[in-house]
Every structure is written in structure tokens, then in C-alpha cells.
Amino acid sequence: MKIFVIVNNYPQSTLPSHQGWYLLADSAMTNTGKPFFIPENIGTVNAYLGIAIKISRLGKHIETKFAHRYYSEWAPVVHFVFKTVEERLGNDHLPLDASRSFDRSLFVGDFKPLEELDDIALYKDGELKQIFSMSKILSNPDEVIRNVSDINTLKIGDIIVPALTEPTEVIIGNFLEVKKGDERLFHVKMK
Image 1 (cartoon, helix red, strand yellow):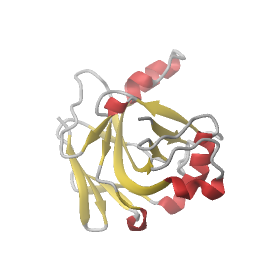
Image 2 (cartoon, one colour):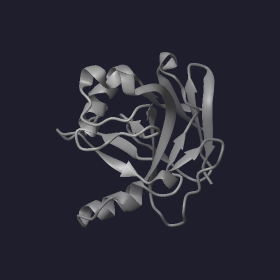
Image 3 (cartoon, one colour):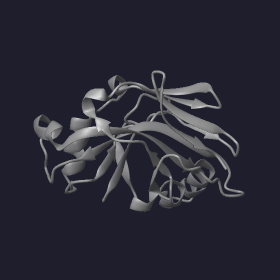
Image 4 (cartoon, one colour):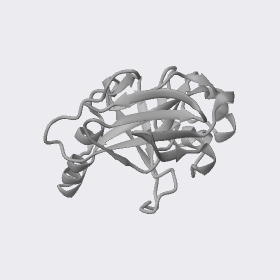
């Protein structure tokens, strides 16, 4: 299973002009209902809100007009990134994997039919921090699938995170909730 996280695909004030993606190890993905453990002396930790789509067909070089045939489910996600580590690695021109692709860095909620996709929100300790809306992403999932499949074979069960919101800083003791309207989709406690 491959997990693709698309970057620079959601409106933010600091967007570079190009989009791309990075891969997460399959051990990065975890089910919800478990806490997120923040290592000692790791520095700033950020949480990003987004959705995941699950690939349901094998394909490569998928044209945009056919991409909708390759997924039918979505799930809410929270992706944790070690910001201080990311900055240090970036300053030294080193790969950023250690800051993003670590065990249990991607919390994935239950997959739901695509027809149920709606705006989702991230709350930290009861306070609204981010709203993720598919209408705001710059390249829709069909375009993302076309781009990714140009150089990658997509297989059944692969996960694509087409966009992430701006970061929300978290510390030990914080309680995150992801909601769709008044429905709580999942929560994560920082330990």
C-alpha cells in the first residue's frame, strides 16, 4: 500500500507556485481512537486536517475524465508533522521523511461513501481551528490522480490525501476532535 500526501493544494498565504507529493510509510497510518504520543524534546508539533481517498482500481496514466472511476470512498485525516525537525532538515537540504513519515503520523477515520463528503472541522480543546472544504482545493482529486498516476501505478487500497489545511500547533494534553457538522468523526488525545 502506498500513501501519497499532496502538498501546496490548499489556499494558504505561504504557498509556493508548484505542487507535489510525498510518500508515507504504511506504518504511518493508524486507526482513530488511540492517542498521539509526542516524543520528548521534539520541538513544535503541527496537526493538519484533510481527507483521504481510497483507490479502488488498478491504473496508471489515468486521464482526468476517467479518474472518478478509481475512488468511491473518503475518510477524514489528521496528519502530524514534527515542525522543528522539518525546519532543521530543510535547512540542511536533507530529506524531510523523519519529520513526516514516522509511525502513527496519519490518523485516518472511517471510510464513507463519496456522496457523504462534506466540509469537516478540526477543534482543539473545544475551539474551532480549521475547516477543510473540498470546494477550496486547487486541484480536485481527479486532477491529483492524473498527476500521481503519470509516474506511479495506483493499486487497490492505495491512499491519496489530496490536500491539507494550514497547521495547528499541538502540545501534550491537547484534545483534537474532527467533526462534520455536529457529528464527531473521531478524536485524538495528545500524550
